[in-house]
Length: 166
Image 1: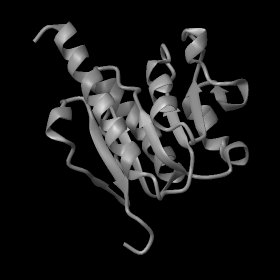
Image 2 (image 1 turned 180 degrees about the horizontal axis):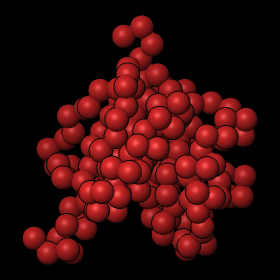
Image 3 (image 1 turned 180 degrees about the vertical axis):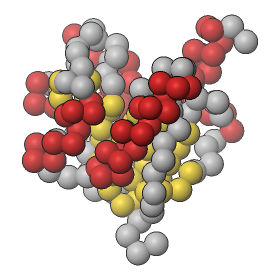
Image 4 (image 1 turned 120 degrees about the horizontal axis):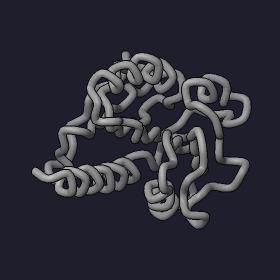
């Protein structure tokens, strides 16, 4: 499979999963976290499919097209491992959806990233909340959700935090 085919499969899976989750968080309180703005395409899509949700974006720098950048109040700049632990007073609620598109394709780098990122995701995900992720995460209190067949990708997983009492 060519790198272009791999990219298309990953983007297709991402789009399908985000829309799948958007339909399932209607009754879950909390904002959306976008971990990694990149070029802003995913943020722009999240704004479109979740127009009434507050979306917080975390990244080390802004390199996106100006039309795909959140307002300054919702852009948290800096290394995610340094800023996410301290976002609580600013964000005020745990997220109904945390989209994690931080994978590199390098298994060693992704394992290292998962080690520091997983506890942060556990801390900031609302009960019943979802985490579509491009890297494998270790999330106690979460289940790995079967994803729609048309979204199957070696690089995407979907986690759901157990609702309280479950």
